[in-house]
Structure formats: structure tokens, C-alpha cells
Length: 368
Image 1 (tube, rainbow, N blue to C red):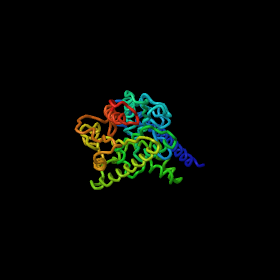
Image 2: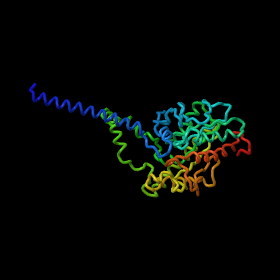
Image 3: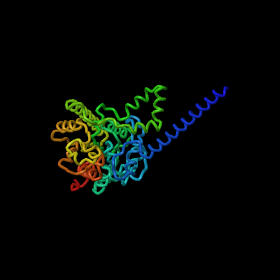
């Protein structure tokens, strides 16, 4: 090989080797940064360990419902391998027939994002009902899951019934997520559709996108517009909201039919949200957004108003908590949508009163 050609080859080889090493080192550094900081956006707050345990847990695949919270053991957040978040104290699983078992379904506000195990709504509900001397001991199970809405809750409830895991009472806490899934598709639907249709070339491109350096670049770029921001106009917001309410009413009817068949008492809770009847000046995220109120969707407000009109004077199986915040000038949230421990206890207290009045639980009259 001519000396000039050999010298050129060595220079190119050295450049390629150094470039490759630099690329590897850059990805290792990016992976380390992502591991330290966490890849899911975290709200501001004093307890970083609690925030890390809340936001840095991946989902786990589950048939029919699509996904669930992964098993996790931490200082503040503990998720059982059988799909529920642990409470303090945690009743046994499978539920004992000698107990009055209450299953609480809902989204991340029910799961208790931003809260320790003992501060969630189901956990505090269990503590409150333990002080009431009902005919049987009351055991409360937290089946809340991030991003769940009424369709996924209905499917999960039916799965439990089909597996002969039948509660005395099924409590469904909804409202917020109904207006984030207005197309009636769970959170990971688009991702699963892409995986099913993926070709070899697309698989290669996806593999490249998963490189730590590429993920870091995505993390550092400006955020996309908020997915639960405003609709194009008020008319669109109302139309979308009314469709979401119609779906919730249909799911309520289907859940009630299954519950009646299996002898379960079903109650439906319409939860508080910062988007409805709350002074956003008290919201903890306002400062982080340069003094502007959080961009909660117009469709949420329209949907709450629409359902309030539909329910009229109320319904015996619906607990309307949407106006709990009315006239209150105090902070009730740990981040944009999740309740703090004090507000969770208030919600649990109202629910404990409602539940203790059920003849099914046989609680003393003074408890309700």
C-alpha cells in the first residue's frame, strides 16, 4: 500500500475510533444525567424522594385495560404486584369474606400521586371507617391508576368480577380524566398502534431514538403545548364535553348492571378539579407558570356544568364533590391536578359519611 494512502487510512481510522468513543461516552453521560434527574416531569416540591417515587415508575402492560402501575417498593410509594397501591395498614389480598370490602377505582388522584401511602384518599378512608363499628370490619383497597378513566375502570371492575374477586362496595372517583380521553382511547393507544404496524426500518429508527443522547436532546427542547389546554372555541369545548359526559353515563349504567348482578353496591364520585369552582390564585403551579393560571381545558368546566344539569336534583348513586372548593382561598393541591394530604382527608371524610350510611355495611346510625 502506498505510504500516502496508508497514512490517510490511519488518519481516517483514528478519527472514526475517536468519534465512536466520544459518541459512546456522550451517551453514557446522557444516560447518567437522565437517571439522576428522572425522565418524567416532576412537579416542584420539598420532598424529592417522594416525588421520585411518584413520577419515576414505568407502567406495566396489562391485557384489556392496556397498562397498570408497576410493582414498586419504596419509602413512600408501594404498589403490590397484584395491581393495587398499598395503604396503611394494608388489608389482606385476596379480600376476606368476613370483611366488608371496598374497592376504590379512579385515576392518579385516587392512586395518590404526590402523596405517601397513608395520605391517599383510599388509605384515609380505610382509617376513618376503621373507627366506625360496623357489622363487619371494613377493608378498603386502592385500585386507582394513573390516567385511568371510566372505560378502563369498567373493564378492570369486570375483570375482577370475572375472577370471582367481588367487593361489597365499588367506588368510582371520576371527572378530571374523562375530559383528557375524549376519544375514548387509553393513554398508550397510539404507541401500541405504532408498534403493531412497525416495519424493520421503523424499528431501527425507533432504536436510534432510544439512545440516551437523543432522549436527552428531546428532554432539553422546549415543551410541546399542554395536551389538556384549551379547545378551539367554546362551542367545540361544549360538544367535546357533552360527548365525554355521555360516555361516562353509559359506563355508569354498564357498571351498575354488572354490580347488581354480582350483589355489589356501586357508588360514583364526581371529583373536585382546579378547572371548576376553584380560585386559581391559590394554585401551587401558578408561580411556575409566570403568574398565569394553569391551562386547564374549557371542556372540563363545560363538562362539569353539563353533568350538573343532567343530574338535576341529584342521583342516589352519585356523590357530587365538584363544589367542595367553592369560596375557599387556600392551597388544596400538590401540583397541577393532584390533591394534597389535607384535601384528600376532607374528601375521604365525606366519602366515609356516605359509605357508613349504606345499609350494606351495617354501620351504627350515629356514624353517618
